[in-house]
Each structure stands twice: as structure tokens, then as C-alpha cells.
Image 1 (cartoon, rainbow, N blue to C red):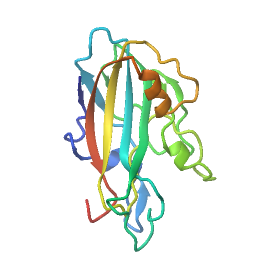
Image 2: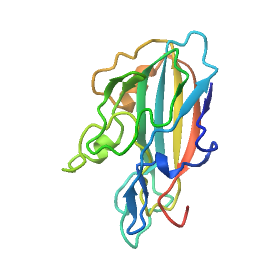
Image 3: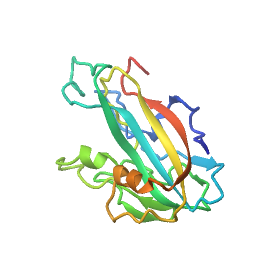
Length: 207
């Protein structure tokens, strides 16, 4: 399958408008526009009955010891874990693209509601866990929320936007699900997939 995001060349920096956080004029971090990028795909097998989109960052620090702390840097050799930024399943088979901003137009404190939309079913992304316990931000973060890597990380983070072609019209997931549940439900049903990669950093030395 072919997947394309027109907003940046494959494997290059994601523009700030698609990020949850941007570099700040004062301090380190400011809230970004958090628009979902336009994404289109082609070349799916004829038996495709639905699509799913998963965006993940495999470069998130596995330990918080150095994260966003003054006079410290997150070391490049620190083990990294996955953070999911977009979970959307049961996209109708006749759909071949999502427009810019279709799944997110801004940062939504406490998150956008998961569940059914006109273009698919939103799962919850990893900001749900990240903001747990934060009185101002905690909630279920459905659909797309963009990059916000540590401002003191020594590496640029990679963001994999993967579109899956599936042989079932619905994954029949519960009302509340995340990327791990979606990926598990896809097993044995993937007819094809394609991806587009973006990079992002808040570290001024890497921009």
C-alpha cells in the first residue's frame, strides 16, 4: 500500500502546526495547534473491508529521571518505549483519505471523546495515561494528538503513521480501547499496510 502525507516529505520534520507542543518564546514549551495531518492511501487489496490508522512514537524515554529537567539531557542510549498518538479504526472501505484537521483542530484539555465519528471509530491514545492524575488535563484522549517529546531529549523522535487494510468491516472493539487492543484485534485480518514517517523535536539544538 502507498501512504502519503503532503505536509512534509517522508522521513523529515513534522511542521509545528501538527504538534501538541511547540517550542516556546519564553521557557521551553507552548501548546501547539495540534491539527491532524491530511493522510491518503492507495493500492489496498480488493478484499479490503475497512482501514485503521495507528501513529506511534517508538522513542519515548522508558524512565522519567531526566525528562524535562533543567541542566539535564535525556541520553540517547536510554531504552525507549512506544507512545501512541493516533488510534482510529473501522474506517469505511470507500474512504481513501482524511483531510487536514479532520480528526483534530486544537489541543483539547481532557481530550477529545473516543468513539464513533463519520470517518471511523476513535480509540484512546497515550496522552490518556500521560495526563492521568493531572487535575487540569486528565481524561480520555481520543483520536489524534500530536508530538510533544521531552524538550531536553538528545534525539529527534520518529513518528510512524501506519494505515492498515483489513478484511473485516469492524474490529468489534469495546467502547473504550487503545492501540494495544486495536493491534491485537487486527491480528489475522491485515491484508496490507503502508506508512509515512515524520520527525519532531523540541530541543533547540536539534531543530
